[in-house]
Amino acid sequence: MTVQAPPQATLGGSPAQTPAARLRACLAQGELILMPCCFDALSARLIEQAGFPVTFMSGFAVAASRLAVPDTGLITVTEMLEQGRHICEAVRIPVIGDGDTGHGNPANVQRTVHQFARAGFAGLMIEDQLAPKRCGHTGVREVVERAEALRRIRAAVDARDAGSDLLIVARTDARSALGLKEAIWRLQAFAELGADILFLEAPRDETEMRSFCDAVPGIKMANMLEEGITPILPPARLAELGYGLAAYPLTLLSTAVHAMHEALEALAAGRIPERRVDFATLRTLVGFDDYDQLLERY
Image (cartoon, rainbow, N blue to C red; front, top):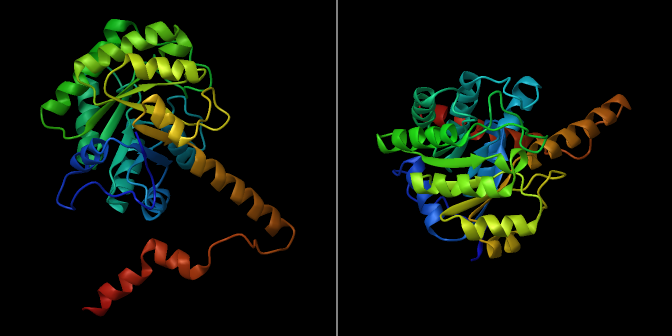
C-alpha cells in the first residue's frame, strides 16, 4: 500500500459528484490518505490549497476554537452543524464530520445523519461512548453496552441506505474502557453492519494497531494526535499496517495556538511579528480578488 499525499493528491472525482462520491473515489484508490483535521472554513481551505484530498472536522478543535471549551459534550449538535456548513461551503474536497454519540437514541442518530448529509458532509463518525462523551485521549472510562453500540451503527447505516449520501465512520472507545479484545469485537460487528470506515480510538502501541488492522475488515482510520496515547508513526508504516486514513486531529489547531502565542509576545514587546503571511496572501486566501473580478463583470 502506498501513501496518498500532496502534491499527488486529487479530489477524487468531478465537481458534479456528491461529496460522498468524491470520498468513495479517494478511498477506492487503495492508498493511505493523509487527512489533516480542520476546525473552521479558513483551516479547511488551507488544507485544500495544500493539496490534501480529504479533511475531517475535529470535534475537539471546533469546541476549542468556537467556544474555548473542552471536548466533553458541551458543544451542541446545532453548533457543530453550523460550523460544518461553513466548512463544507468553503471547499470542494470531501469533509468528514464528528457526530459524537449520535445525540440520543436510534431516532436521534438517524436525524443526526440526515442533518450532516444535508449540510454537505461526505462522511460522519459515530462512537460508542456514554454521553456526555469526551476526547478519547483524555481518559475514557465508560462506553455503552454492546447492544446499544450496535443499535447506533445500525441506525446510522440504515439512514445512509435510506438516502443520506455519506459514509459512516464507526468508532469505538472500548480499548480504554474495556480492553482491546472488546474493542476489536465491536469493530468487527460494526463492519458486519455495513460501516464504511472503522476507527479504533487510542490503541497503546504498534502491536495493538496491527492487531486491529489484521482482525477487522474494511477501511481503517488511524488517529495521529501529538502527545496522545497512540504512537505517532510515519505514513509509510501506517500504510504497511493496513490503515487507509490517517487523521491529524489537532496539528493545525496546536500550531496555530503556538503561532498566536508568539505573535502576542512580540506585540507585548512592542514588535510586529515577523513570522506571518503578508496582506496580499491573506486577501487572496479569503477571496478578495475573486470578489473584485465578479463585480467587474457587472
